[in-house]
Image: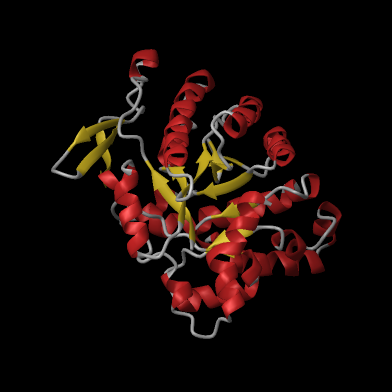
Length: 329
């Protein structure tokens, strides 16, 4: 099985605070044995285990849970879209090098996704060749938006064009969700309440922003089962059928664009999985767990494994073949 959705954090960070004196650059502080605190803006952002950077600990878990390969991407907060591009590119290269070393050490167990300074799409596009040829990574992880600008905006076309040209896969992960200021309760609720709508907005922007019309060979996968987009898609299809202005903007039905996208299976429940499988097709779904964070599905692919009505061929698509098609074309 290939687990598409796993995260890593370097065991240490470069001293970026010396460049701009900005407290938002992350730091690591040791906690109790086996744990560390990721500190951002002077506050503990997340307490993590050594599994975030120790490949041997990861491989132990993988062997226990029948995972042949993990696809590695950084904790999304590290994408640092708030930073000045010239600083962000230094930080991104550090992250990319750390993942590259893990992949190089264990090429049969890990596949790497890079990070780019997408707050400057032209600079991000230039980094893609470095990601592929020097760091030898298979694709990139990007956020659902950049400083509030949806990734379907034409400003990002230069980036998508280069990714398509180089054949790099793009994994989209939510961060700083739309409307998080309206969530009542502890900040962690943004991951549970805010992410589904954030992802839905992002997928919709890729479709209505004509990203797939301009770059039909682009391989994009959205995390967390596409969030609420399974519901939004049906409304988009109905709108396209009934509203002339939508048909004038979108040359094809939203359904046809959605069929070009991939989604991970991180939905936690068989009932939701059945729905996304029916809406998006078994050919477009890939196992993803969010390892090693507490929100993870454990073991990876549990929802898929619990589905007694899947054929052997469907199991293979979900566990391996769809991931290979997304990652390598």
